[in-house]
Length: 451
RNA sequence: GGCGGCGUGGCCGAGUGGUCCAGGCAAGGGCCUGCAAAGCCCUCUACAGCGGUUCGAUUCCGCUCGCCGCCUCCA
Image 1 (cartoon, rainbow, N blue to C red):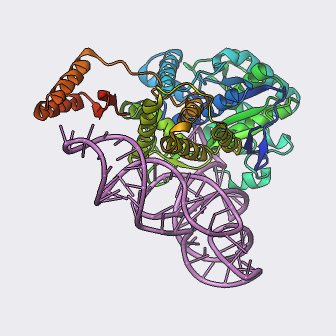
Image 2 (cartoon, rainbow, N blue to C red; image 1 turned 90 degrees about the horizontal axis):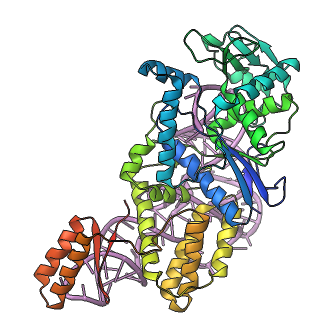
């Protein structure tokens, strides 16, 4: 079974599914108040790879990832555009899923929306109030962090030290008793979207939705809660605190992926404003290149998405593409067992995907050096890349348009009669159409280079 | 200030107390080719610095320097 760093303990530990053979997973999804950025690309790719691998390993995975469709930033965006929040959120959500398709990231099994769970959130807040874990302040209802034993587990600090480092409270949260307390229910200002509650019309705070949605769809003591490292504290801590205060058993294992950083090594961050649009990047690089880049770095390390790193990742994809093209007509074979074994042990070791790539490229080299083993090795590469990692490779012959086929025919004819001037001209035309041209014993072949 | 992490060859990026070697990208040379492309071969070979432990440290320990993350919004 796969061992994964557990943020709650600081140790790599084997996953132990609550229900044998089934894995229940919650991943914190996007707030749809803008275009997805590179950080969204990483978090979704990392855990998409994880999810596929778990399924490939024979587990059934119940994968839940939420969409936060009501939140301050959405209200601001809607006000700026003079449109309803639901419309703005809907538009960005559409862009979100389109971008996920571009990345080759599978849809979650469930994608609960915050606005569909307001009633459950109100119920939870009532329970917290009744239990003395929450209080009413000026602008709404707040959670009392001091009321929970062991608050600070995911930050690996205790309440007192966290409080020492906390920054000055925001003015609109003046009703809080402690800077670490957080809002459960925000009373609506005039014109803001609002839902009814015993504490006045308003909207839920961000941290509550994940509690009711994860417990609602995955049940008590679900297996794994995932997200970007920046969510570990305070977001996940605050989820955990609510669940504990409500006497519910929450996630049993927490895992967090590292941040995307800029060229200088600084984290991409909304407040800093150094975030890069993901759809914009996907115009320049296909999703497979980004997936290769993610695979080439450990999921917990900071990852820079630079031109050089992207070009390098593209080179890897191209090398795999070439290997697949040259081996796809080999007779079918069982995947090479030792290659698969190495793959499993790399993945099971806290998702060491860089080592996975080393193994895959090792198989590629071996297949070229030892033709007798090539069918089994090629089958292993296919199994690993396609089935387990979601890295689509050209296992099927590409269809070429008539114009390209005509160019290929012209080059073949010219070469056959020794007219290299014409042959070169035909090649240039094909290159201009975006193809790499190769001469083979079977004649001219063309292929597209990864974008 | 508290807590956590990082510093590997031109670049990205694993890993390890002791032979050799990560892997990819890039660069240079060669083979192959009508010329190419792809592929193959070769070259460039590192572990921030200083101490310590050890027969032996890039790997363990300490210190120094540098960088980053969290304690604000955030994936």
